Amino acid sequence: MPSPAPADDVVSRHERIDWTQLWYPGPTRVFTDAELARAGNERPSRTFLVMLAISLAIVAQALMEHAPDGELARLTGLLAAVAAANYRAGMWLWRRPTRRRLMVATLICMAAFVAFAFGLRWRMAAGPVRDWLLYTGAAACSLSALVFWFVTVYRAQQIEARLRELDERDRTIALARQLATAQIQPHFLFNSLASLQHWVDTRDERAGPMLASLTGYLRATLPLFERHALTLGEELEAVRRYLEVMQARLGARLRFEIGAEPAALAAALPPGVLLTLVENAVEHGVSPQLSGGVVRVSACIAADGMLCLEVIDDGPGLPPDGAVCGPGHVGLANTRARLAQSFGEQASLTLANVPDGGCSATLRLPVVPIHHTAIPTPP
Image: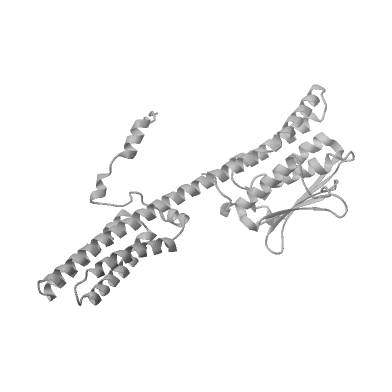
């Protein structure tokens, strides 16, 4: 395996002069169609256009002040034609800023000046006016080439900066997702392993089923750390395994029901969002009651085409002020943040008290197949 290049070599390569810019100027990076679409801004901003127009107007004013008598109309027409051609060429370069396009635009500009110069020599007699028009045309050609170069380099650097910004945002989202997913209540695992060890030491017959449920839970939750999206069916499997482990620990105090429409099982959702709601229902709705309680999990496709997930418990319900404190608050905040990152305002999470007692958590989000998911993918 080759050793990494020394830092001095990397710096020297970065600072190395690219002499090809003398005869083949422009950005060296060629952007793909996907990169251009991702960067956006197919048209320059109004501020950029206004600043460029003001700069060109100042140059045009300077040329017109030195125009020979009687040539102002001809000069105005020449500058208008140059401005129109530069605008079209500039937009062409803006949409795809490459060295090849810059070279083509510059060569066309030079060819137009050569044709203009030959036309002047053929139609006008030698004299100060013709010489002035030639100098003005040469200045317009040089200025146009400079504008082409500026637009191309500016746009290329803008795209590179935007792509770096988007990559950094994606990395931040991926890191936030991983941190949020990692909060699968470590005390749950510690308590489950402690119970399992105690049952093994005492040769309790509950040890075998408990070990099988815990193994199934760990196997079902492993994709939470490896993938950016799960199907509802996979998430429900993790939920079922979790409830089995908790049922083994709590015994008859915990009862649960899981129901889902077959059409909803293929929908994609961020890993762990439903599991977090179920954990909160067990922690705040069932565990505080000596008599235990029931947790019901349901999933369906609503009439408006949205995926509707509901977790209901028959515990004490929400506090009078509606505030959720403790670890559950962090889990719910992470869940809302991940839903906003994945679906924007299309997804919602609401908590409400059940009239007969208990709390319901309702999650609504768009139905997105796993192979077409819009959930951000870690880079």
